[in-house]
Amino acid sequence: MSKLAGSTLFSFCLFLLFGALALEAMTFSRLAKFFPLYITVAGAILCLIYTIILLRTLVKKEGLPEELKKLQFTKPLKYLSWLLGYVVLVYIVGFLVATGLFLAAFLYLESKFSVVKTAISISIVLVCLILFSDVMNLYWPKSLLG
Figure 1 (cartoon, one colour):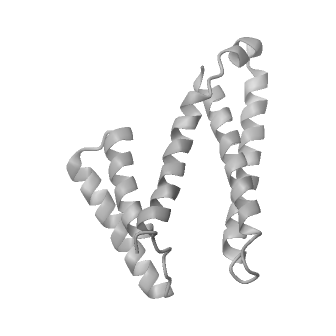
Figure 2: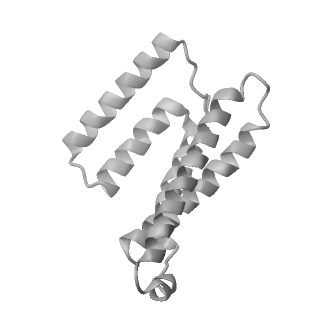
Figure 3: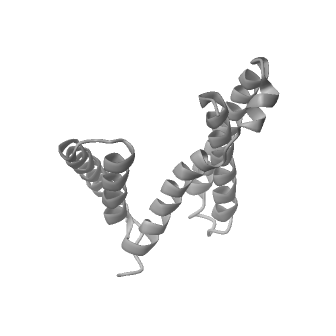
């Protein structure tokens, strides 16, 4: 599968994910649904636009039937499983801990960062999140574990 075909399939999967999350955000209370709904709708629209652009580029290339035969669902699902794993981690251990664990696993295993670069990246992200939550007076999702 070419990089273009894989990107097309992955962006379509992200469009479906944003659409499902937008539907879930509709079930929130009136005031609680504004931010998640707007973000997911914007994400769905941008993913749809990007998917259409990629599809048009893919159609313009020669050998489209061969590309369609080679489409694999495993590569995009690999990254979607990373995202789903992150969501499950947030549900189980809480937002800040899940963010640290997810970044550690993703940056070290998937991005092949060294341990030092991974630790520096995690530190920067967590410090920024903590500062942002203090300035904006935000409360991150709690965990199942308490």
